[in-house]
Length: 527
Image 1 (tube, rainbow, N blue to C red):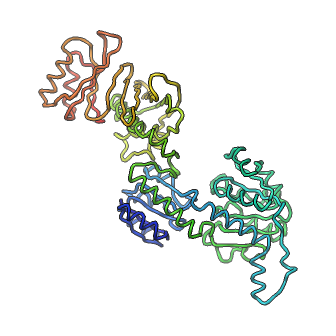
Image 2: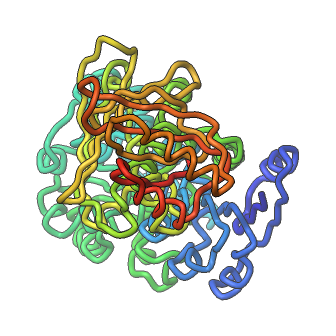
Image 3: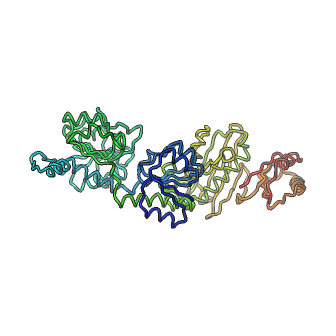
């Protein structure tokens, strides 16, 4: 694989990738046009916050399989386009958590004790002790908005400073908060009760301007705002007015609505504002950690292992992934069988229902769902993969339903029902270790390893039918390597036949087969 790195990354990361056999190119400071011109030849791209991976860049990246963001925020990457194109986007959510948390505490102390202003004063030959009387943190209430990895680390450190810590995060359990002595409260209560508010959420439509004029008006007089998350979560105009009027005692900012910020930003003229140039993750330890994290994700992808920190794929532990991996292959094969039997290339699928039974029901099975959709749609959608399968299905209006259930016959069982509105097919399968087997097609019990060239046919259960099929294939020089007849209801009726052949039959062979007396239909699928 060829890897392109477009933002500064520790050399140890580059050497790690090279030692694993990757061809690595480092080119920083590229314009969008320059990146578009060279990206087609690369399989992987590593960026920090400087490179903007736009829709135009991703659409030009013909071979790109993964974008690694050496950091947490991925707002500089067009994730929607990457997902649609089947490109994994992975970040390093834990690598700089401590670094950013420490920087947050540093800013809190700096603004509360007026350290930058005092430093400047002393260096100018002044001795203004009374001017720089600060605020003690002990017994003060700090409100943490977002109790994710960084917020959690900030909260722990604030507790060590004997602060009263409250937090707002609708996605965090009470138990998680109690582990570090944090009280979860509604956002409005946090805003009203906090002496210091610190923000640790991603920038989304929901969080943009989260701290606006209305929110600031509810804050305590003389409170402080800290933002080491993303610019735009705190409205800079509203913040300026509150600081200028004295409503707020101070603010500390590491991030800005526009980066680099305008030098004439009015916030920079205020003495009660402490600023740093997006340094939250800027420690040697953090940069090495996040760089190694994304490097290892690229290595895992190349080895067929799970990408743990993919933001557009479900997260799954390695041990769990090892168990479900053969089921990914099984699901994809089942999707291919269904596509062949329903003639998906000619008719649109409307509904897919997947039931996970036994041990599978206890696991994160979204990968299996995606694998089934990949197998079902790959004959009509080019370059579909586990990343793009689910959004492509949704785009095509396919209803996807997942369910769980108990089982007694097998440790785990995968059941699938797929409908095009008129016809429906159902399949079941299981795995024994790394061996996957399809055990049922519709009402017919079968037991076969889905690998190789298969002709699947419905036929009347009477003498001579199978013999005529053998003669026909022999006339076309196609050798039958194996045969399974799935019977239902005993002798007679309509039964299912699976023929494993050494060479794929063409359309002429299948048409001639369907003309044979007793043959109802015949389709070919390569599994």
